[in-house]
Length: 189
Length: 189
Image (cartoon, rainbow over all chains, first blue to last red; front, side):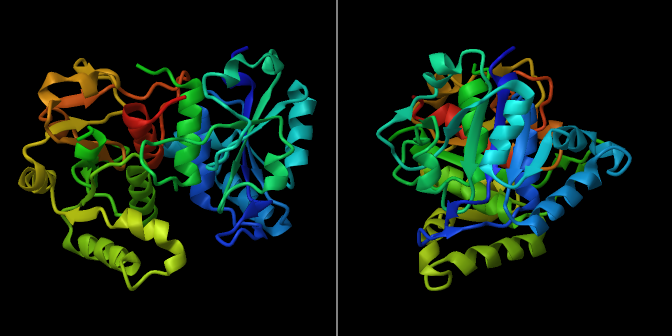
């Protein structure tokens, strides 16, 4: 089983920072659901978890997903439906880990961050990490101004920030997730 | 001058296909403006052109841009303002080429496509292309179901489709553009 087929992506809406580095819960957005689902599908990722502790937000996400599942969304948008079939809505990172553990065993949990960290692992290094051998991988992406330190401090690994060659480093989470998946799993040529 | 600093990105809203391969003009979206501007800025791209022949759409885009330019948008969103300062709204691909020619000389025009093409150039090959030596590069991204063949047939180069390792190939244009810029200009580690 390839690493991509053992990998789960989680889009985290809490705990994340706002612009003033206060802990907040961000709102789920329709486009984040679609874009990350399509990117996950393109790279053969096993599942995509939407994480928010707010029940009304989980219900909203579930409604969007149901709209596109079989018998609902238009057949001509089949490629969207296919991508959304792998999405699950969960209340917390712990629930995401528990869900993966149930399906495929305890995952190695890896955060992504735009900030430099002393313990960052490279994109070439992560797939070769012995701790990942045969295990599932959970990649965490933070919305808002990024994952809270309490998360980053407790995960197994932290991926190196994306360096674009310029000083500016404010990719949208949609763009950042696409780039991370391509760096880890893309068939570069 | 690095290649990134000589590169322009254009998001093309006409001529592109709809799902039935009919030529259409897609609508400009707020999020496409922001996401591609932030990705362009991250990779040190010289400029980002929004292309639509519809005057009312150009006016809408200009209004969004003015909202974020100095004296208007909130200072706390400075990173958005910075990114949007490099955006220009133009009626056609020809106008985009003319604008770049005026500033920096005639660009090598390179289309991106999710479809395979006999004459595709690789991500490693394009930066070394002798025809690009010292010249600006214009990268065209199609909205909707992709750039019309009449465009792809007439450009100087076509980049290879992004291969994710799965059969599925339906990235959003926001994700695809981020990946292409990372493959060409990212500081991979």
